[in-house]
Length: 243
Image: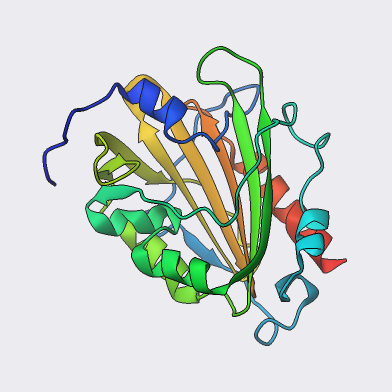
């Protein structure tokens, strides 16, 4: 791992650099990491033939997302730009797969995304405000299984990593661990990225379903368990798509 550049305080980095994450359950309980193979698969019908697997329109994406009054916190005025291209860097570079953000994954999004949207929920607070985001992207091709396989494999070498928002940004030393991840959609992947000594982290649950990719992200205390809330919101999107 290359030495970090000008290291910024991690608490600030987690609170600011990952703004679309969110906070944990109201009553924290200890998190129990699973094995490093955090990717789980569920049986699927023939490729992309279910209603929740189809290519979506912008209107269908919006209808599948939770409403402004359906979050754990008030809806934020901020909007998610589903076309935004990440410039994040990690060391090792393979750790970008933990957020489905490798160069190949970015290229797939740029070339194949046809619709997307999201909702942010934010608890009013001066610093490190509890947040949750739910995002849905749809593509003109089935979202590749290998991207989720890469994410699961990356966890084995990314127990510790350095991360920054751009190549010129300061890098912060972080830890990554698997989180309880239910089988849903065609494949699901869950990971926690943060620092235990600061009791701050970001939990991610990713679900692929045919042409579609779902993300639920929460900023959390490191000892909190959010798996039920993450799964509830991801399953809610799948259920709406299946109607």
